[in-house]
Length: 94
Image (cartoon, rainbow, N blue to C red; front, top):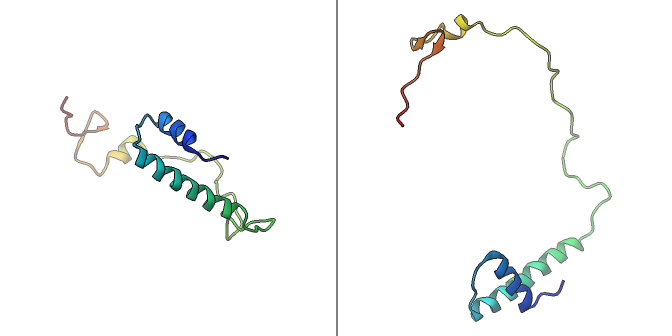
């Protein structure tokens, strides 16, 4: 990839920003430095099987089996704030 002032101008146009000449020069050098750093990382030797996870990944999802749940009365048993079989909350201002 060629990093030049035309690329900086295109990126600035896409970002809808206006750069001064001083900013264009600074961003040009910064952009080159960033791409050089990534190319250094890309050139680093890597194993065939990188160690992304230190332990093997296992499926920990449980089976989706129906089980009995609380009745409405049991769910509302410990609250004082109920009305008509539902939890009663504060009014919401509009």
